Length: 131
Length: 131
DNA sequence: GTGTATGTTATACATGTAATATAACAAATA
DNA sequence: TATTTGTTATATTACATGTATAACATACAC
Image (cartoon, rainbow over all chains, first blue to last red):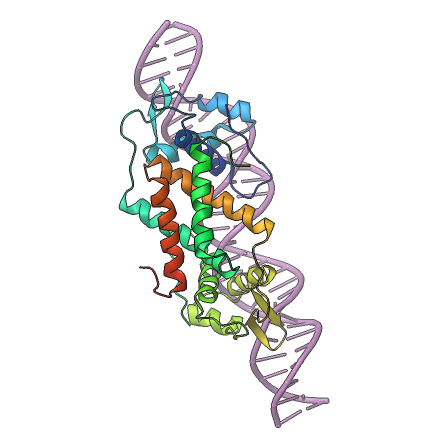
C-alpha cells in the first residue's frame, strides 16, 4: 500500500488514513470498485491497531466513498461518487475561511492564495505527490 | 465584541476564538495596535473560562499576531506582521491538500475549487461576513 | 507606599477523544 | 466445518478540552 503514517504528527492516525485514501481515489491510484486491504492486514502492515483502521474505513463509508461488504471486504465506491452536496460546500467554505484569513493576515494576496489552491489541487490529480 | 461562539460545535472554543480574531485582523475590524479585552472580561462576556481565552491569546502571541504586555493588556501586533514563512507555507499546503482531495473526489473541478478559495478570501477582506 | 488591574502560573477535576489490547460475535464463502 | 471478513463490546492508558480556585508578578494610579 501507499500509506505513510507520521506517528509523531499531531494529526490523528485515523485522519491521516482517511486523507490518504481520499487522495488515492482522487488521483486514480485507487479505482472505483478496487479492493482495500482487510482492516487486520492493513493494521498489521502499518503497525497500528485494528480499531484505528476500522474507524477510518467507517468514516469513509459514511461519506459514501467506500462500500463495506461482509466477508467480501472493503471496496472503493464503484458507481456514483457522492458529489458536491450543500453540506460539503458549507464544510469546505468554513475550512477555507480559516486558511484564507491566516493567509491574508500574513500578507498573502488573493491571487496568490487562489493560485496556491489551484496548484495543490493539480498536484493531487496529476499524482505527483506534492513534496 | 464581534465574537460569536458555537458551544455545540466540534471545533474547540479556543480555536473558534483564534479564527475569529485572525479574521478580525485580516478584514481590518481589528487595527494594528488596537486593544483586545482583558481575558477575564472577555471570558465573562462569552460565558467561558478565563483559561480558554488565555490559551487563544497565547497561541496568537506565539504566532506573532498579538503582543501581551503585563498590565497594559493585549494588543494587535502594531508593527510588522509575521509574513509568509516557509513553515506557514507548508502548513497551508498540507491543509489545502486535504480539502482539495475531498473536493476532487466529489467531482469539483480545479477551477471551481480555485474560484471558491478566491471568493472566500474576498469575503473576508471585504468584511461581508460570508454567510 | 497601598490598591488595583492586568497577565501568569499552579493545582485539581470532569469529560471526551485517540489509540491500544483482548475477546467474542455475525455473516459469507470455500 | 473452518476460515476470513467486518462488527461489537470491554477495559485501559494517555492526552486534550474546559472548568474552577487560588495565588503570584508586574505595572500603574493614587
